[in-house]
Image (cartoon, rainbow, N blue to C red; front, top):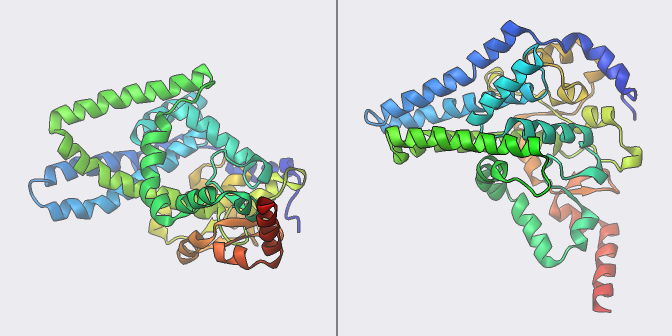
Length: 347
């Protein structure tokens, strides 16, 4: 069923909320980057006082780093502050804290918004998702690799190392000069800053202070991104049937969080609103949701639902939903497909 089909009508309905305010944007910076840096300093000074206090500070520090990323994300959409130039400058600085080159991340994330839920344009800013048929067509090595990738221990354990530390440092061949310079500039800034901190406090203390909170924040960030688009009745369509608005309303979840967690995640759980109009600042998302009837029937996901959603691995085009590996194997149509593939291989 079509919830809304006219993209211009969507933007018109939500235009009143897509107006960044300078004071509110500055408050977001003051309640994200400032407490994150302050807690990092506090953790360093607590190292010689009480390791238990340092451990206790890891969780709130990670929470504020998640909030830093959401503010960085708003800058990428030009929605945090009224000035485009200010968004770029603030985003570039915050990009150092989250280890992401701002201009290249902004470009890739815009592509994610333009292709989310489109089966024929997967792979840009997505968690890799195969259809059941694609998975069955792979060799056993390919299937094993996909299973390992989608394993929670790999995705949320090793994932932050790859997504935060390794991937943003890579410059693929053919990258446009502006994007390449964004990566190289961020890398150079990180070398100088991290090198200076290691020289001042020692690399061991730097890692003890920085790494646990950063990796925890990375795991939370990956989980958030996962549950925003990977739930049982998500939306995936081929190019000819794909709709931007339908992908936002049916393929982006409303992750209902307790108020404290909603603060640390910068309202990003209202992802359906964000995908309908990415120019709405995080601080206006809840109001936009509450005021508009078009959001009355969007997919709602609880924290527990989000944890359970990790079991869904493949998109079943016949059923129109995400399924587990076990469900895919039990699907009668897919059994025939699998037998046919094995028969052809033997022939």
